[in-house]
Amino acid sequence: VPKAVDRTERTAEITAAVERIATRDGFSSVTVRRVSEELGASTTAVTHYFASRDELVRSTVRRVIDRRTGELDVELADLQGRAAVRSMADWVALRPGDHHHRLWLAIVVGAAADVVLREELDRFNRWWDDRVERHLAEFEPPEPDPDGLADLLDVVLSGLVVAGLETESVWEQHRRRTVLDRLLTPAGLPPNP
Amino acid sequence: VPKAVDRTERTAEITAAVERIATRDGFSSVTVRRVSEELGASTTAVTHYFASRDELVRSTVRRVIDRRTGELDVELADLQGRAAVRSMADWVALRPGDHHHRLWLAIVVGAAADVVLREELDRFNRWWDDRVERHLAEFEPPEPDPDGLADLLDVVLSGLVVAGLETESVWEQHRRRTVLDRLLTPAGLPPNP
Image (cartoon, rainbow over all chains, first blue to last red; front, side, top):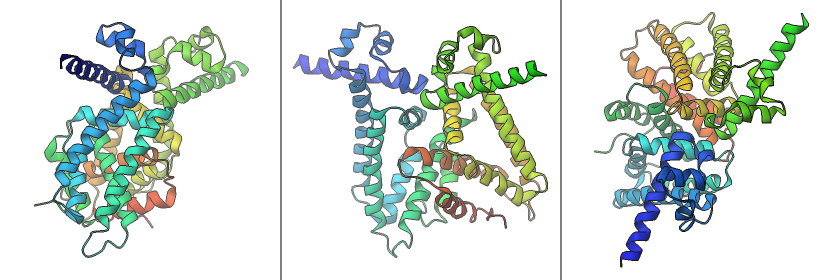
């Protein structure tokens, strides 16, 4: 089915271009024109697949988030409670590279002024919060302050996303893992074996 | 000296406009034209004070950072060691409002593609790292892993800057302080009395 393959390949190229522009200059720089220029194509080559700038942004962000949450679903298949929450933390802080962290920050920063980003970020946050809440409820012994621990987790993980971008020194895996262990172990989330 | 007052007022208005544009749309949207539009003024009303876009960005960022580090210098005047480091943490995480956190993130995100932002951020990071290092060296008993603790601090503070922006739920002072205490106390940085 060459036509479907074409469509898949073309939309992947287009959303990759959106990601590049967004991580470099922010989502406020994503327009149909800029994306066409980035691809060296005509604007109709973009609008054939995505009717508007908002649709471009929504599809790109949703695609990235769906792929990443799909990966996490697989990893969490056999895990529960503390092990599941700690695995979620590792997945955010240690697994993706700089590119994903930059893209994530562009989404967070852009959501202040962009309704589409706000909606997609809220959609992800609901998914994340539900998942964390579910696994916190499985803790044995029960976690006395689940909301507090969920907040703590948000802060540590957001911090690890930003920390690697703030300085020019490299935050390689070992350095990230050391900080993660030092912050999460006293909170009752030691590394998984 | 009305002329000097005028100059101070005008440059303050202009850098405030740069801050508004940067926190809303990112520093890649800051141009002399956009700043003039934001002010309802001509471009020469801006270029009279700031010769170029880069000078506009540099002056704005440096002004904000100098004001904030000046405030911190005053707070730290009588403090040493753990108390000083914990006070630095409180100052970043609890003192400024959403506006400053947004502006900070815009600087961090923008620094990836903007040499001026990169330089100003590096300048601040050197100041911050020197100050943290100096106070870590004053710890009694000595801190066994000062680099690790400096990393931990960067992650927690970056996390608290982002956390308030990521969700629409409000991270008011009490909520921030609870997480900060829960993360920093086990690391040997309990709240100051």
